[in-house]
Image (cartoon, rainbow, N blue to C red; front, side, top):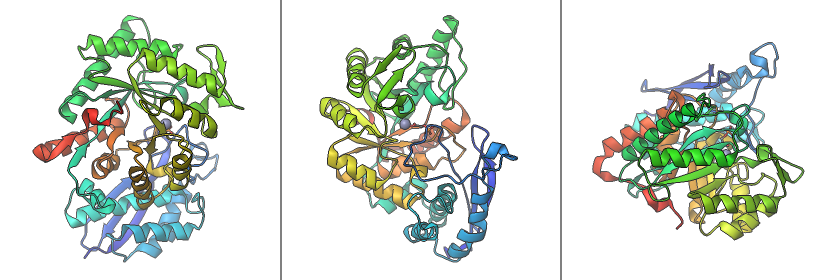
Length: 429
Ligand code: PGA
Ligand code: ZN
């Protein structure tokens, strides 16, 4: 009795107030699973495609009624009555139904909504936690690892108007015994940072991912504020707390030049790498994601050659969670880590395949939210179930972000002594 009885999709809202796909999937044992689909703002050009209505009379063209109809009228017909535990088969059926690599016909948002609901329903039906269902799918029966949170406490780039050139400034509390203590440290630093900004007369309004987003600051000024916040909160930077950056460089690169407006600098790819070298020397930065643009493969190779031993170099827009691009990156030694966002590829099965390839090749995996999120917390279970060791899901503030951290707090509590906190094991040095 694990058969899919019905699937109903609806148009719901994400954290930006934009429409997104919500799915309700019911089994013949009356179990009901719901899922909702996230959405990016600084999307990579190679990502699987979200289907939007482009009807300017509704939601400025962003409606998803076509994607919803594709679920209700096309996908439902072919997967109702299948065994919900057959994730791979269901995902493959949808991939075949769409028939293209980028999934524009049914919409990657439609396909992902059903893929997620299938995963959630199978765990409910099997009466096992979602992370356990994920670890069964990836065939990993090692000890459960609670990931280190990468807390995005200052937002810029495409995530906050008039803010920094870099998109994300994250703190990573590694020097702690548990996820719970790491979150406490992160939250205390976040609130101290808010006070520091306030005392300087700067705005404490926040960006899409809950981090502060005052206008007019340079990257260095922000890093100085973060260092001050760590120290004023009585934590040790470079020991207990490290810093991670996601410049999202594709957003400020044009024709091979990187335009740092706040620094009044226009840099070549090599000069951009030198810029990072200086930052790494000055601050305890352990990870840089999308430090170079998504088509600057040459620059990525040089960056990894220069810093890949000591620095986590994460491909987000570069790999878009797809095996094809990850393989290229492995072959060319373009990075040493990959960001995992399931809506960049469109199904759980493909996401897991990408993670498997990364692990096999000693690439680290960072499980990630999108800047447009919902109350769905599946990525928390994905992080534990795959033992990825790191999760980035925004500031320790705003419900769309803390929902994931709260899920991890509950998982850790429940597992009590049978889990370990990834902590400083994630560091290269
Ligand atoms: P996005 O940003 O969800 O807007 O793409 C997140 C990221 O770049 O990591
Ligand atoms: Zn990114």
